[in-house]
Length: 371
Image (cartoon, rainbow, N blue to C red):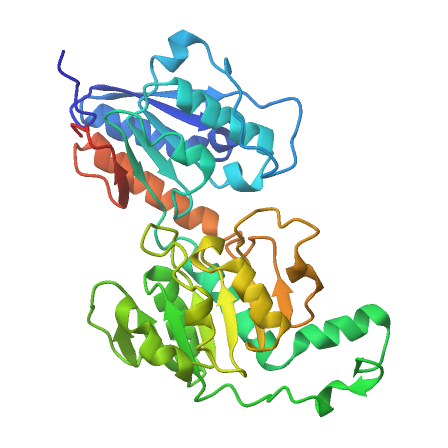
C-alpha cells in the first residue's frame, strides 16, 4: 500500500499542547484559513494538561493512553512549542507520549538539537522528519556565552564567592583577589575560537567583534564571511593549529557523531594556562572528566559551563566545587523573545505545508521516507 506524501495530504491533523493552543489561538485560525484556501483542512488536536507535575529532566519516561486511538489516528504533524521545555514537565512528556503512539509524519521542535532522549526515540519512525528552530535562540545563547566570557575575564566568579561569605574582596585566607595571578586583561584583541559556527556561533562572533576581539570560527564547510563576525574560518581538522593561540574556546555546536568527544584531554591540554573554556553547546562535545582535572590543576584558567553529559548535574560532581568554574543549568537559551521567533518559524512551515512546499530547517529524515 502506497504511503500518502504529507505534502499531498488534503486532511492534516496537528498535535499541540493545551498552552500552545490557548496562546496561539488567533494564529492557528489564520493557518487553518490558509489550508482552506489551498483546498485542504487542518484539524487541531490538543493534548490535555496533566494534573501532576514532575521535576524537569529527572525522567524521560512518557505516558501512554494520553489520547484516544481515534484522535491518535488523525495526527500527522506535531509542534513542540517553547512551553514544552519551559512549562510543566509532565505536560511535555504527555505530548511526546502521544507523538510516540501516533503515526506522526513531521515534528517541528522549538530548539536546535535532536539528541534529547524523547526525540531520539522517534528516529525509528517510518516516513518521518523533524524540523528545528534554527537561529531562534541564537541571540540569547550567544549573549550567555559572552556574559560567561566577560565574567571570567573580570573574575566575577570570585567576587560572587566573596559576596556569599560576606567578605570584602578576599579569597583563600584573606588574600585580595586583585593580588592573584589571574591575568585580567582588556578584552579587546583577545582571541576567541568558536567551535560550531552556525547561527549561534556567528552571532557570538558578531558580539565579540563589537568588542574588537579576534574571532576564529570553526565550521565543517567553508563559508563566505566578512570581518563583522570573523577574522578567520577554519575546519575542525585545523583546530589543533589554533587552539593554543586562543584566550577563549567557545563550544556552540550541536551533538553529532563528529562533535561527540571532539575536545578530549589531549586537545584541551593544548589550551593556554590563562585561557577559558565556554560550553553552551552540548556536554558530550567535551571530555568532562578531563576538563574537570585540567581546571583543578589550573592547566586551564577557568570555564563557563551551561551543558553537561548528565543533566541535572549530580551534586557529587566535582565541577560544583571548583571556584574557577561558573555553572548554569542548561539555561543559556532561555529568553522571552524566543517565543516570537519560534512561532514565526512554525507559521512559515505550516504555510509551506498548506502550499505543498518543502519545509524549512529539516534536520532529520528517516531512511525509508517518501516525504
